Length: 451
Ligand SMILES: Nc1ncnc2c1ncn2[C@@H]1O[C@H](COP(=O)(O)OP(=O)(O)O)[C@@H](O)[C@H]1O
Ligand SMILES: [Mg+2]
Image (cartoon, rainbow, N blue to C red; front, side, top):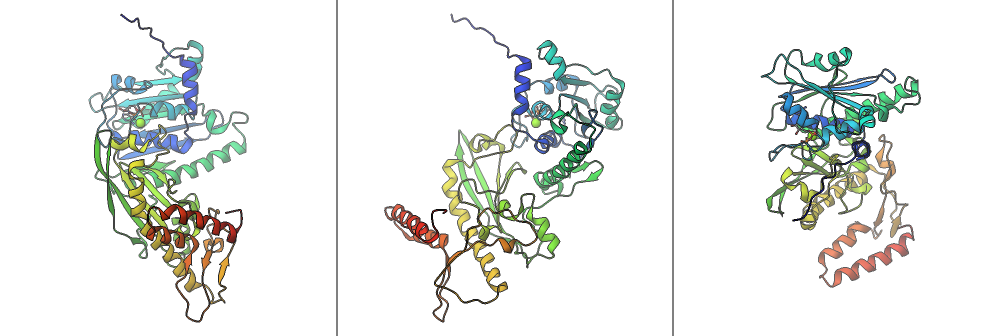
């Protein structure tokens, strides 16, 4: 018989390394919000208090709460439980790794309906682990901490997470200084935008669960809709379902393309700026990928195409169920996914007409709004693909590589990429690689090495 040797990982080494699993402040808070949503919370309160090295973050909810045994299990790295099909949790790590990515010490207290008079609380403390090198949680005794933990639960069931010694948020050199305070303020601003975006479907009551409200420092977070669906000129194109079979799981992936209005079509310059999103128009084009209605990725084309000024009005919603987590290769911090290879081509086929329409729409409006000018046979301008915009006038960062002639009647004008796309579309399989090569040469000779 083979002999087995149990090797328990070094607590202080592993817990410390897991701090760098890939979270930042916003994604760490979002992972705790996931937990609260999953616990059925209808209200989540986030309090970020600046007080030098006593600064703290507290996230409390009115979800179903946990009994003392459930709470202990929840505190375990790699906690065990059965997951439902639409659950937001997955690895049994988020609560611990997200919290520890931002602080050296975090507490969790919880109260259920059944145990009204008892609010258990536990804490993971890096200093304690450093000392003991054991996977040990401790029960907090300090009065001030206990009241911070229990006060939000005086009136109702729910869970409270408290981050203390937030070294990663402030940097501990001058935690009382003005730069530290300013940094925290800007992190809060970023957090507000992030939560407004990631949970917009929950905040706008677009899911089948009960409505959700999130407050950040007592201010209600309003949802940010990446598709600007309240704008009358937003175009909702036909949706598509793509079949996916992966490791025994079967289902359909929903794709819903939108074409957003041009700057001139927006109801106001402010709405246009607001719809731009955290990374601005150019970067925000592409896929909006949701897992059980929670956004994982905002913008970007997942390797299917490159960002282009002309296609920046196209945004495509893609929703998948957690049964396809492996197919989408979701990571622990829920910050990245990959399109499953077996449906990448199908997805490409579905989105290309939408992207083309978006481009035609943008170019059409652009042409109408620009002054008539003499057309040369072939006009080129410096490519500005992926250029960051100021948000105030995106049309200034126009890139154009278009073909046209001035023979009196204007022939149809194609963009270079569009020509290539159309040629590939009508080509046979053997012709396709040749056409690609020819276009590559043409691109080089017309636009130079930089392309
Ligand atoms: N706010 C909360 N309310 C109720 N239960 C929670 C809450 N946060 C965490 N839990 C419990 O703790 C477990 C571990 O959470 P976590 O470490 O985030 O892993 P995961 O969410 O992947 O299961 C959850 O599965 C859930 O049972
Ligand atoms: Mg979780």
